[in-house]
Amino acid sequence: MRYFIIFAAMAVAFAGILTRVADQAGRTPSPQIAAASAVAAPAAPASSAGYRSITIPRDSRGHFQVDARVDGRRIGFMVDTGASTIALTGSDAKRLGIHPSASEYTVQVRTANGTVKAAPTNLSMVEVGGLVVRDVRALVVPDSALSENLLGLSFLTRLRRFEYAGGKLVLEQ
Image 1 (cartoon, rainbow, N blue to C red):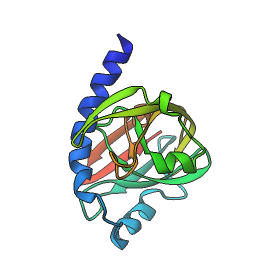
Image 2: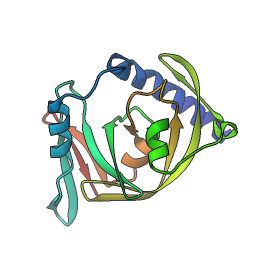
Image 3: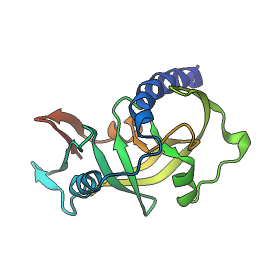
């Protein structure tokens, strides 16, 4: 039953997500996106009432881009509150040393490009702008189905809060 719920959540999330990223297939990031990513993960997060927080502005496409450290390696993400887990492209998973075998692609996910199989994995640590979450669920998705990594709810719900306010996304831990 648990796998059915996870599958259903992933199917809904990826259907919405991939409609947004489908228009980016084959495009390279613009300098504005790279600049927004650099701003999104400040070296010293702001502190309010003892909590650390970061504010992420929208990029030129209206998305929230962040640079993260996954198991010590820098990886770019689009923050996606509609994704139930972190979704990694196959090529970025390989850069992280994650090499799922063909038999590990067991989770079926419905995308704008059709149904795709993804491989579940766990990430030891994900850090965004000084906010650290350990032992985070993720999926490895073939590059043909996903053009960029998605920072989903498996990370976001482990924070104290995340909210959209004043045209910006605020993450707090």
